Amino acid sequence: MKARNFIWVVLIIALVGIGFWWFKRPTATTPEKATEAPVAAKADAPKPDAPSTQMAKPLSSVAQVKTETTNAPSPSADATPAAPDPRAELKTAMQDYARIIRSEGTMAAMIAFRNPDDLANIDPLVIQRVLAAEARFRQTANGQQMDEAEAQKYDALENQTPSYNAAGDEATYMFTYDSDIETTSGTVLHAGTQFPMVFIKINGRWYLKGSN
Image: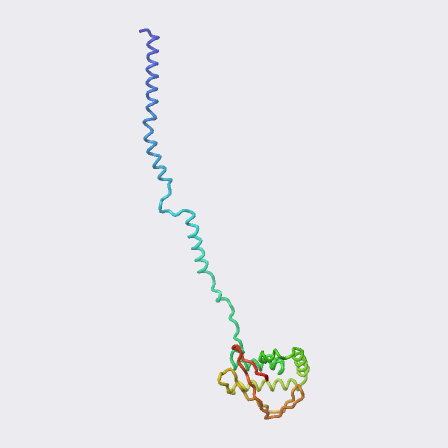
């Protein structure tokens, strides 16, 4: 065999061997890649029991609301309790009546404690004129003396037991003057004068009962 032919034969055999090795190489590595792929997919896949992000948000919101509700101050903790109505009890109603006499006058107290139904039938202009006349009268020494004596009598009535009607919503006190006092109308109430002072309870509050 010639040297040239021998060299071509060797090259052909080498190329055939390289080609056979090249085609055989992917077949050998394919199982390895196929084995690794499921492992990677299994590692990346979420666990069946793990809650998703969408499920976690409502649970977190509920927990936050419960926490805020628990830590929130009670509405009644900082709230200032309302002052009791002095008209709810007869004794405190009498005290409130005497207070108004000292601060505003006898007629002002009578109007403030007037039966609402009776008060609605009185002309507002008449009430204004009465209060204006009393304000002028209170500027005199006699007016101040009268109001103080009136207030002291109501203070004394706190220790008097009134007589009640059968329903218990009317209480009658006997008011007695121990000295002569001139009223705003000019009438003189002599010492020892008595007259009934009737209080009536309407819708849970005590009022001075007026004439019908």
